[in-house]
Length: 269
Image: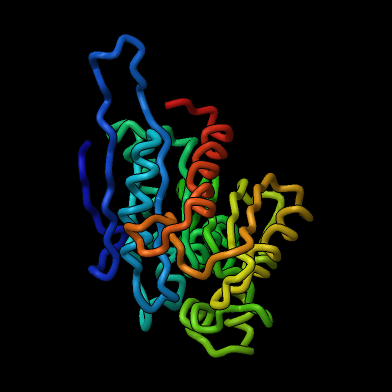
């Protein structure tokens, strides 16, 4: 394994840590490249949760993926598309270095938790939006091939996680800028496939967020998979004792997301 670090933009607020698999040259039919996944931990755009970083990365690494963790800008620097520009630049940089890093450029997913799910979903829904293009520039290869969204912040309606949307928009509830970040209204026929999971008992980010995303995806006939577990609170991460929320039943989401990605990417470890 090779560990790399880089800053997605020319400032110190954001940092990417990448875990690159090593090509095993002794294997006769060795792989020439691997799929990659970029992890966006949650934290309401107030902080970046560590228990939604490395513990998740290790699971995808074990499944045969290159993994990149984005520790993005938070409040008060989360407005003006900054975290989204950081994520876009991260994916773009992975594609530009695909040959050197042994990444399949057509198999790059983004994975987000809570507010990090909002960030990941923003890249999959706002990448073609005029307001974002004006802020970042034209698409230079930052669009993801898939999204894995864990109890994501999605809506800007009565089920919104108000703090996350206010921090992402840089504006107060009720303003047009605030409403813009309701991502279920930005799903189009160009949105990539999505894996979603949530718990029905989540009292921080209501399950209606994932349900709204699923409805929007269904309307546009975008392939998606949705799992709603009957029990469990918010922020369960990989649902193990390591992250402080042991739940073997809900932990199945991890295996399912890997199987879903493998099927989508046509990948076998």
